[in-house]
Amino acid sequence: LRGLIRSDLLPIVEEELKEEERRRGKPLTAAQRMKLRLTYDSVNRAVWVKVPAKFEVKQGMVHPRDRNYKILTDMVSTERVEKAMDTYKRAIDEAEREVKRVLQELSGRLSKKLPDIINAIVFCQVAK
Image (cartoon, rainbow, N blue to C red; front, top):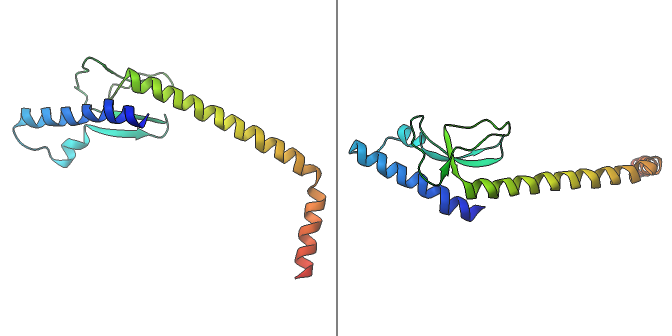
């Protein structure tokens, strides 16, 4: 995924910034550069390129969809990055389910020994 972000998304940002500076005939201000940048959306667990409202999607680019399947017109990505992120998100979800299962199993085993654990803690406190 990291390699795809570097090979697919970073060039979009760099190319568009250069193109915008060429159109304006002068370097962009920090505020203007922030309108076109690589961004991480923690809610959607995704990395996208944030673009201005009037951005023209070029060949190979797509407007991604958020977790509610709404098209994000202020973001762009590529099909390859979107597919890799989908695989990544599925792996995260699977790992989360497995961790939850293991913790529930451990909790079930420990709950049977809880009185002994509490007695051991109390004994340790009294022995101090």
